[in-house]
Image (cartoon, rainbow, N blue to C red):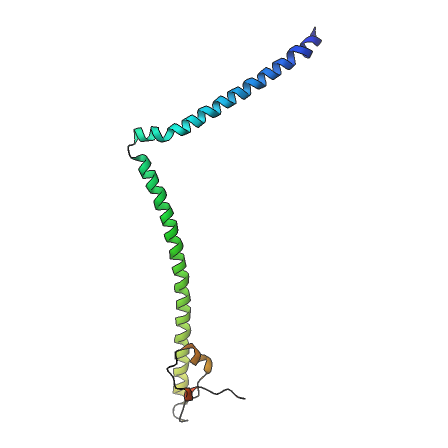
Length: 133
Protein backbone atom coordinates (compact mmCIF):
# COMPACT_ATOMS: atom_id res chain seq x y z
CA UNK A 1 0.00 0.00 0.00
CA UNK A 2 2.82 2.35 0.85
CA UNK A 3 4.36 1.54 -2.51
CA UNK A 4 1.20 2.57 -4.30
CA UNK A 5 1.14 5.89 -2.45
CA UNK A 6 4.75 6.60 -3.43
CA UNK A 7 4.15 5.38 -6.97
CA UNK A 8 0.87 7.17 -7.82
CA UNK A 9 -0.17 9.70 -5.22
CA UNK A 10 3.10 11.38 -4.31
CA UNK A 11 4.14 12.40 -7.88
CA UNK A 12 0.66 13.81 -8.53
CA UNK A 13 0.78 15.74 -5.26
CA UNK A 14 4.20 17.18 -6.08
CA UNK A 15 3.08 18.23 -9.56
CA UNK A 16 -0.08 19.82 -8.10
CA UNK A 17 1.90 21.74 -5.48
CA UNK A 18 4.38 23.01 -8.08
CA UNK A 19 1.53 24.06 -10.37
CA UNK A 20 -0.15 25.90 -7.50
CA UNK A 21 3.11 27.69 -6.66
CA UNK A 22 3.54 28.79 -10.27
CA UNK A 23 -0.09 29.93 -10.42
CA UNK A 24 0.28 31.97 -7.22
CA UNK A 25 3.57 33.48 -8.42
CA UNK A 26 1.94 34.50 -11.72
CA UNK A 27 -1.02 36.10 -9.95
CA UNK A 28 1.31 37.97 -7.58
CA UNK A 29 3.37 39.22 -10.53
CA UNK A 30 0.21 40.45 -12.28
CA UNK A 31 -1.00 42.16 -9.09
CA UNK A 32 2.36 43.91 -8.56
CA UNK A 33 2.38 45.06 -12.19
CA UNK A 34 -1.19 46.38 -11.87
CA UNK A 35 -0.29 48.26 -8.68
CA UNK A 36 2.77 49.78 -10.36
CA UNK A 37 0.65 50.84 -13.33
CA UNK A 38 -2.01 52.42 -11.12
CA UNK A 39 0.47 54.26 -8.88
CA UNK A 40 0.73 57.41 -11.06
CA UNK A 41 -3.08 57.67 -11.16
CA UNK A 42 -3.27 57.22 -7.38
CA UNK A 43 -0.64 59.90 -6.86
CA UNK A 44 -2.48 62.20 -9.27
CA UNK A 45 -5.62 61.84 -7.16
CA UNK A 46 -3.78 62.49 -3.91
CA UNK A 47 -1.52 65.26 -5.23
CA UNK A 48 -2.97 67.11 -8.23
CA UNK A 49 -0.23 68.22 -10.61
CA UNK A 50 2.16 65.59 -9.29
CA UNK A 51 2.99 64.10 -12.69
CA UNK A 52 3.82 67.52 -14.14
CA UNK A 53 6.18 68.16 -11.24
CA UNK A 54 7.89 64.81 -11.80
CA UNK A 55 8.23 65.48 -15.54
CA UNK A 56 9.58 68.98 -14.89
CA UNK A 57 12.04 67.53 -12.38
CA UNK A 58 13.31 65.05 -14.99
CA UNK A 59 13.65 67.82 -17.59
CA UNK A 60 15.51 70.04 -15.12
CA UNK A 61 17.82 67.17 -14.18
CA UNK A 62 18.69 66.57 -17.84
CA UNK A 63 19.24 70.29 -18.37
CA UNK A 64 21.41 70.44 -15.25
CA UNK A 65 23.58 67.60 -16.57
CA UNK A 66 24.09 69.36 -19.89
CA UNK A 67 24.90 72.66 -18.14
CA UNK A 68 27.37 70.85 -15.88
CA UNK A 69 29.11 69.32 -18.89
CA UNK A 70 29.26 72.75 -20.53
CA UNK A 71 30.70 74.33 -17.37
CA UNK A 72 33.34 71.60 -17.12
CA UNK A 73 34.29 72.22 -20.75
CA UNK A 74 34.52 75.96 -20.15
CA UNK A 75 36.63 75.33 -17.05
CA UNK A 76 39.08 73.27 -19.12
CA UNK A 77 39.24 75.98 -21.81
CA UNK A 78 39.80 78.63 -19.16
CA UNK A 79 42.67 76.59 -17.72
CA UNK A 80 44.29 76.45 -21.16
CA UNK A 81 43.86 80.21 -21.61
CA UNK A 82 45.37 80.84 -18.18
CA UNK A 83 48.38 78.65 -18.95
CA UNK A 84 48.95 80.42 -22.29
CA UNK A 85 48.58 83.83 -20.63
CA UNK A 86 51.02 82.85 -17.88
CA UNK A 87 53.56 81.70 -20.48
CA UNK A 88 53.24 85.01 -22.34
CA UNK A 89 53.60 87.06 -19.16
CA UNK A 90 56.66 85.06 -18.14
CA UNK A 91 58.17 85.60 -21.60
CA UNK A 92 57.54 89.36 -21.34
CA UNK A 93 59.15 89.39 -17.89
CA UNK A 94 62.23 87.55 -19.20
CA UNK A 95 62.45 89.94 -22.18
CA UNK A 96 62.23 92.98 -19.92
CA UNK A 97 64.83 91.49 -17.59
CA UNK A 98 67.14 90.87 -20.57
CA UNK A 99 66.55 94.43 -21.82
CA UNK A 100 67.44 95.95 -18.47
CA UNK A 101 70.49 93.70 -18.10
CA UNK A 102 71.84 94.54 -21.59
CA UNK A 103 70.71 98.14 -22.07
CA UNK A 104 73.82 100.14 -21.10
CA UNK A 105 76.16 98.01 -23.26
CA UNK A 106 75.17 97.30 -26.88
CA UNK A 107 73.11 99.24 -29.39
CA UNK A 108 70.49 96.48 -29.68
CA UNK A 109 69.51 93.97 -26.98
CA UNK A 110 70.22 90.26 -27.41
CA UNK A 111 66.88 88.44 -26.76
CA UNK A 112 65.95 84.76 -26.66
CA UNK A 113 63.95 83.62 -29.75
CA UNK A 114 61.78 81.28 -27.62
CA UNK A 115 60.62 84.24 -25.52
CA UNK A 116 59.98 86.30 -28.64
CA UNK A 117 57.92 83.44 -30.13
CA UNK A 118 55.63 83.52 -27.08
CA UNK A 119 54.55 87.09 -27.67
CA UNK A 120 53.31 88.78 -30.82
CA UNK A 121 55.57 90.21 -33.51
CA UNK A 122 55.80 93.57 -31.78
CA UNK A 123 59.57 93.47 -31.26
CA UNK A 124 61.85 94.47 -34.15
CA UNK A 125 63.72 91.53 -35.75
CA UNK A 126 67.08 93.20 -35.08
CA UNK A 127 66.50 92.74 -31.35
CA UNK A 128 66.12 88.95 -31.57
CA UNK A 129 69.16 86.89 -30.52
CA UNK A 130 70.84 85.14 -33.46
CA UNK A 131 71.54 81.44 -33.06
CA UNK A 132 75.14 80.38 -33.29
CA UNK A 133 75.87 78.61 -36.54
